[in-house]
Image (cartoon, rainbow, N blue to C red):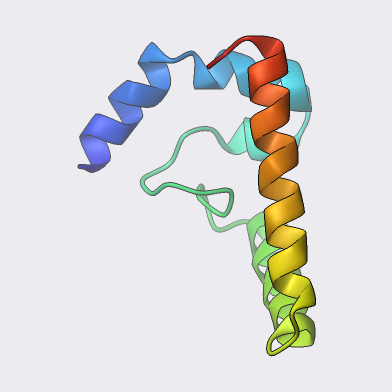
Length: 89
């Protein structure tokens, strides 16, 4: 499955899109496509460690609150709207 996901990313131009959206100096772009899906993928460097810590802190603060569902829904809608607007779907 992992190999399929990498091929799918290559076929869909994910790397080019990431460069356009994030910029070539962004740590997420610099880390490139790793072995697993998700924003936390890539080498376990200082940036990756900080990203995982911040994500954990955010989840800890929001667990048990309906606010996390509101944020997830709003963020997902924005991503989908942007993709539709850009004509990628």
